[in-house]
Amino acid sequence: MGRITKTNQKRFATLHGGGHLANVSNGVTPLLEESGDYAPVTEEHISQHLTGEGPALGVYPLWKKSGVWLVDWLAVDLDEGETSSVHADNLIRLLEAKGIQAWKETSKSKGYHVWVYLREPISASIGRNAMIGACRIVQVPTREVYPKQVSLEPNRIGNCLRLPYPDKRNKGRHEVFDPDGEGMLDVSKFIEQAWEKRTPVSLIRSLLPLYEATKPKLKQPSKDFSPKDGFKGTAKKIWEDLNTQDRSATMYAFASSLLWQGYSFDATVDWVRRLDQRLGKFSERNDQEAQIRNLVQKAADETT
Image (cartoon, rainbow, N blue to C red; front, top):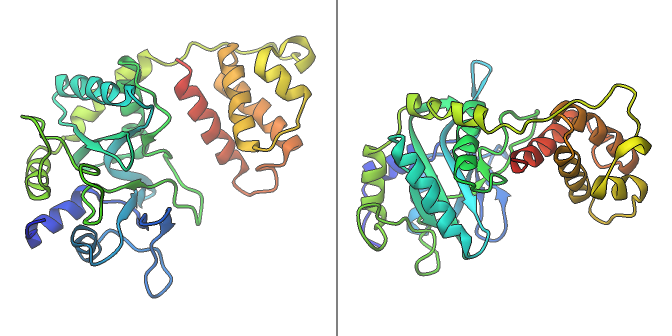
């Protein structure tokens, strides 16, 4: 890798701004300062990521200002095998038709990341909904849309995404395709182009009608409904047999089944909460409600 200028290191750090960093060299571990605090995105850390003087990094996107959770970038992680590249290309074409420059990166194994870099921070909820709406229009899976959370409970940091161009990487992986030609961009050209083609927040907001237009049409169950009256399929099996080794997967499958059967978001949250009381996954935690709502939201994003 050629020398990366200080200016480009600073730009790379700004493009991938967020709340904190993670060491992703071997698994995913929050990066800590000597003080024990979570490490922020800094030019020094980014320089070590790009040059190999430090670990490969990922970034947790959410940060807070004046009570609002914000993000500096949006992304989709696609890892569905052979269809991932097609999904990435379809999403990028839609975004480009809306005037939004998106970047396709090869991820660690056989998948792809689609990145959108912003000229200024945007509300995490607006950014997430905008990307979900765009994905739904072109039938791209929405389970791995970043940010994956729109707010964080105290002492929580959310989910991170690996950064492109770690110095220590397999050939052809974690590199960005040249949108104007064939092959991959070297890191310096990528930084320069991504910096110049950052997306105004107004264009991200223009995607919100896609989110509203693709919301699942869900109905409320009757107030006197009880499980014996009408749970079907997977939800019925789970409710009647709680013999499970993976409580999170069981609760997700239960929520998905209810949503497909026509339960509203709030009704599904209510029934998943009741299931959780029986399984004991989140019931003893202070953030039970947030965890359940995040789980149901992920299921709802897949229910189109």
